[in-house]
Length: 254
Image 1: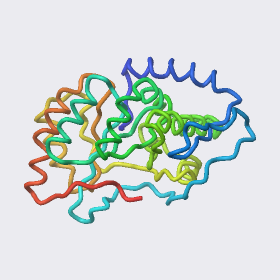
Image 2: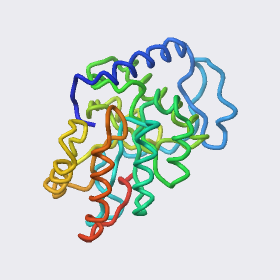
Image 3: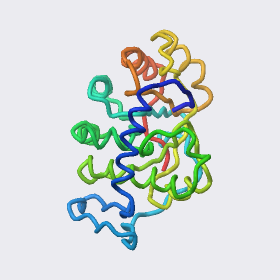
């Protein structure tokens, strides 16, 4: 999501994340692969990472559906009020999306993470605590934020790993991109910021998407961090509208 401040929700998330971090101190941040989550490695710094296939370290923007593809990406959840509504709209129009989840939110709502996966959507690591200043922090801190969130999301999903990593506020670093890619998570950017977090009104969200879509296919929305009624309403109008204009919905390239 875009950088911005003054959102009290993230203060609560950060507080929860700090508690998680303290509990996890000294423990391994590596997670088991799908199908082996029940046999987590021992909490030791010598634990080896699960074998994963590295992916490209460059930040992905393109769609796997090519020139007429559109990628719907949903940030900051899951949220017990808004994520089910977003899922309902996506289901209504047969659209698959990429959900960029905050680790503490995934840990708090594993049922929603499983619903996202069961519906055929993809998961994305959006860090433990949504710290938009991660690019100013140490490599050790970046590693904790990325790898702990990967573990939280994988465990919450029942063993399905995130396929992407989106830095909060786009705060990527060469180190964070390389680390995520080594864990099979393609760094994920966006081309279109719907600005829905500013609560500008449904019509304004739709107008922003229409105006910025020529910039590229990956569109940023949110299902947490505040009232998302405008986002749900905008998706309800945009999804059939985009399809009617000849766009097809896909996933970011890997």
